Amino acid sequence: MCDKKISIVGAGMGTAEQLTGLGSRRLREAQVVVGAPRLTEGLSGELSGHAVLASHRTGEIVEFLNKEKWTRAVFLVSGDTGFYSAASGAAAAFEEQGWETELVPGISSMSWFAARLGKNWQNMAVLSCHGRDVDPADWVRCHGESFLLLGGKIGVRELCAALLEGGLSDCRLWIGENLAAAEERIETGSPEQILLSDTNRPFGSLCCAVAENTRAVNAAFCSFGLPDSVFVRGKVPMTKSEVRALSLTKLGLRPGAVCFDVGSGTGSVSVEMGLALKAWGAGQVYAVEKKEEALELTRVNGERLLGNWKGFHVVPGSAPEAFAGLPAPTHVFVGGSGGALLPVVEQVLEKAPGARIVVNAVTPETMAELLQCRKHFRFAVWEMIQVRVDTFRTAGNYHMPCAGNPVCIALMQNPQPGEGAL
Image 1 (cartoon, rainbow, N blue to C red):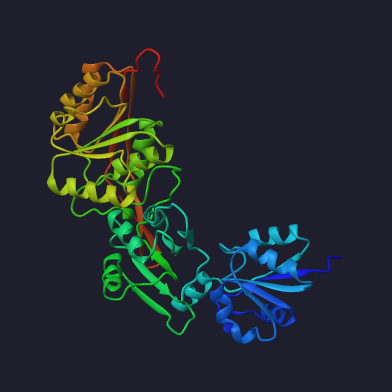
Image 2 (cartoon, rainbow, N blue to C red):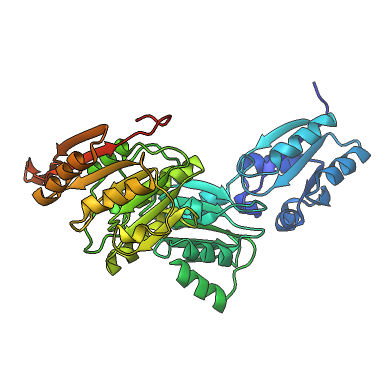
């Protein structure tokens, strides 16, 4: 059995009230206590009669401990020993020097801050920005509720700036500074409001944040059909979730695809194309739209859900004229062609004879155009289905179906030699 034992004690936010009962007992039993100056100073009332080294450098601490014949020591770490803590690295260093180590958990900044806000934290997505090259906007964009440890290059001001630049101006922030201390400060508001607060009274370096994003999307691309509520819509028509999922599945995107969304509307299809290609790491999306309100919504939804991804392009103008100067597409979705479906398809095939094309049609006129396209271009691959999605609403003790409009989904392609169809 080892005759030297060091307890690595989570000291919470660094006050005696933050210590657990076991942590306090280990301090009383110790001959020597080491830890960062902020912790040894904050717990100075508990350390009388102990040898103390105020340092956070593991090498310096090990050298200090080896100079004397101590057998019981405590190493103080902030927060909890298992939450972005120096505990694991320090434990390995102490064990190499013949010390038996023990981890004594403490109260993390996350659990303390969540309690102060009256929030549960089990579903929060955790990101440490301290000393790491991360994009907090990408993180918040993909999670409904996030906890962020701030520090290093990303403080409160940088967090707010990143969220505003990333199109997340309507998310809500809670900022905690100097938690559990007499000068504890907690503020809430939009990124813009928090920036103003920081201008009037700058936040210090000991800060954390909770971010709430009601329009979060899953970070990892799994399948198509995001909820309609994710998108800012206004009065512009939008391809509904279920029809969008079927249409994009028929389209059969692949990594590196060059996609056109013709008549992008709110940009719901463009954005889902982009999410897939962004997750795969290669591809481009060109959202073509002639109406000003729809163009703006496509931009807004693209910024909100794709952030600064460079593969998303909003192209103003009517198709097919707006195709001039665009690269040859591999995949084309047509949600609206303004009665010009035949010339749109013709121009696509001139640019890319093997392009895979999916068209949505709601009116008989557009369906007639689809049949004209089939006859005129003699597609080797042709599928045409009609779907209707019914939803249910509650009516007292009953559930009543609400009929949706039928939508025709057509797939067409002339695979080129060596390409093949999906």
